[in-house]
Length: 216
Image 1 (cartoon, rainbow, N blue to C red):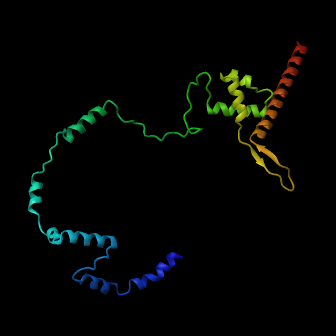
Image 2: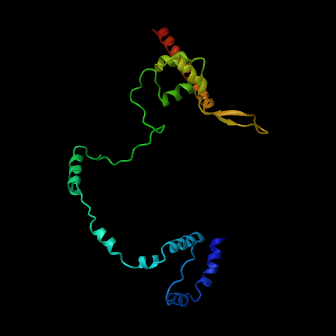
């Protein structure tokens, strides 16, 4: 809306603009902007103290010129070229990196340590054993997690108590009840399916072994 209004008013603003510009330029002295009341009071006070203040400001002050001639600036530092050369020579011992590739994005926003000290854990490990505990809390216990990741049992219990992985919750509708859609539920389904496959493979291997023993 504002753009349309400005476009509509543009011809009116630019009407006879050249003649108006010449009229302003041809004035002998431009119109001075009005002063604030406080500024007028300050000027009135200064003129009362020194009535010739305007004349003094418009004339050259010889005493001030003499004082300025007595002012000298001396430098006791080193030349800028010497300082620059010294910095360049020092930088040869610490050259800039030649690899200008972009820094890769890490999975959790930071680089994980290569070695994890005893009693410490990483974010990746914490997510792994928290999600595993949510899938199968009876098997993946705090004691087993503490033994595998070299942690204290008390610390692992507190982690499992106060931290959980995010879950997708679907609210109830007219046709479907409320349910958790994952990711723990999906992991549970995968865990069950993998467990069934492993059990099936074990049964098949046992049958093959029994058949070979009978043939021999």
